[in-house]
Length: 207
Image (cartoon, rainbow, N blue to C red; front, side, top):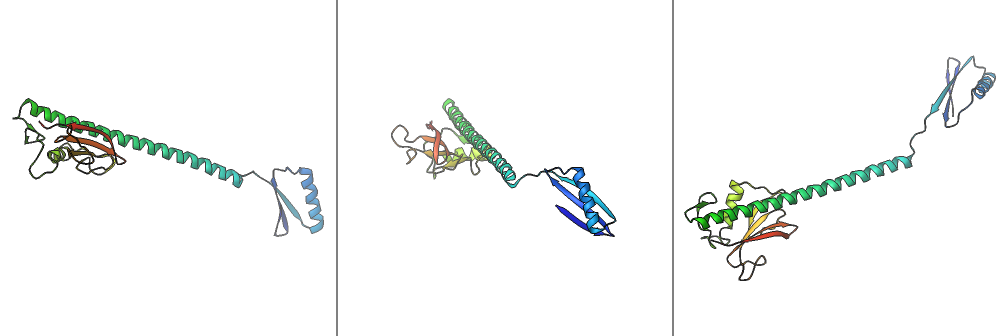
């Protein structure tokens, strides 16, 4: 490419080379020819070598590769985050059931003991005005005193038809569809949930 710039009878030629090297001898001949044709007093030759840039295809490939790595990283993080939340939910369930069983054992050892803060033993299969018996009392202590938290958000403990991700729920059996049959009747069932499915459960008998 040849660009002509006229200023005070000075003729400047800028030769931009892309990949092809122009010999100095050829440049001198070009200079002499222009002087003869144009009658210029002075010619300045500037050799500018343009470096090869990325092509559009190469840039697109780089962008695609970056996108693949970013997507893979996001998926790995999402999978790790989900596993961590499920692990915490399972641990909440384990601690809640262990605590309720420990309080129940206190009633077994002596009915004069106080459990779940200030409730009197024993744990029964009914509580006046409560369809789910002691489930509500379990929940009051677990949420207000022990302050368990659900890693998925929402409540960590529920009574009755509570099936949110990460929650530990409590029902007084028999209650459809959670429990039925003589082996569970008038007992408490504790369950933890994910994806609308019971992940684990424990049956606790009244004292």
